[in-house]
Length: 340
Ligand code: TXA
Ligand code: MG
Image (cartoon, rainbow, N blue to C red):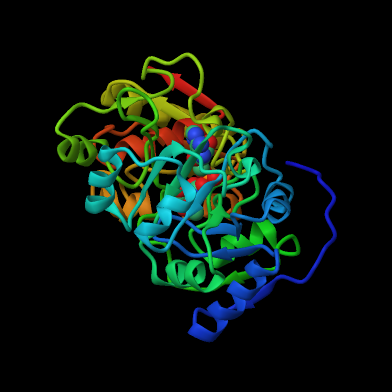
C-alpha cells in the first residue's frame, strides 16, 4: 500500500441530479478531483488540459507515474482535440462502439499535456456510455482524464462506496449514482501500429472487435507475443483483495480436486476460505451468467475481504467473450497461480 502523505480533506458526496453534476463540473474546472460513474467502473477525473490537476490523480491513487490515464470525451467530435490524427479504422470503430467500453490509443495532440499519458506520445481516449459521465464532461467544458477511482493495486470500484473506502479524504468529491453495469474496465485497443492490438482486454470482446474489423486482432503481453507490457498499466499487480488469491488452472476435474484439497487444508489451519467462481457460490457463477459475474467481480473481491477471508480460491474460466477480461483480472489479482 502506498504511503504518500497528502492533506486530508473532506470528500463531498454528491447525488447525480443535474445541479449536483454541475457542481462537480465546477470542481473539475477549478482543478479538483471528482470520482464519477461510468458503465464500466468509477473513474477519478480531472480536467485533461490541466497538468497540475492531473498530477494530483497520481498522488491520490498512489499510482506509479509511468502508468498513463484514459481521456474521456462526451462528443465524438472532441476526439480531434485529443488525438493528432484519426485513422480510418478508428472512425469505423467509433461509429460502431462509442459511447461504450472501448479506449482507443492514438497519437496524442499537443492540447493534452504529457503527464496525462505518462510522457508517451500516444493517448488513450474513450466516450463512456453513462449519462452522468457525459454530462460531467460536457459541463466541465473539456475532456476529463480519469483512471479507475481505486487506490493503486486494489480492485476497481463499481459503486461510490468502493470509491470512499479507498479515497475518502484524498479527493474533492464523488458522485453517487447507479452501479456500473459492465463492471470491468474498457478494452484498450492500440491503433498506432501496423495492426490493431488489444493492450488490455475489457468490456468489449475481442470477438466483437474482430467481427467489426473483419480481421484477427492480436493481444499484447504474455501469450500475445510481446515481451514488454505494451500498456504500461499491465505490468503491475492489480485488482487485488487484501487476502491472497490462489488461481487454479488446468483440466476441470484436476482443478476441482485441488480446490477441494486446498479448502480442507486451509480450513484445518483455521483460515476462512473465500471461494470466488466456484460451485458453492450461490447464483453468481461464471458458468451460469457470465455478464452478471463480470459485473460483480470487483464487488465480490471486496466483499470476501470484508467477510474476513484469509485466502481466496478461484478457478480458471474460458477466455471467450468477456472471459478474456475476467481471466486477465484474475491472473493479475492472483498472488499465486497453480497449474494442475
Ligand atoms: O473503463 C475504463 O477504462 C475505466 C473508466 C474510468 O473509463 N478507466 C480505467 O483506467 O480503467 P485505468 O487508468 O485504471 O486503466 C487505463 C489503462 C492502463 O492499463 C494504462 O496503462 C492504459 O489504459 N493506457 C492509457 N493510456 C495509454 C497509452 N497511451 N498507451 C498504452 N496504454 C495506455
Ligand atoms: Mg485501474
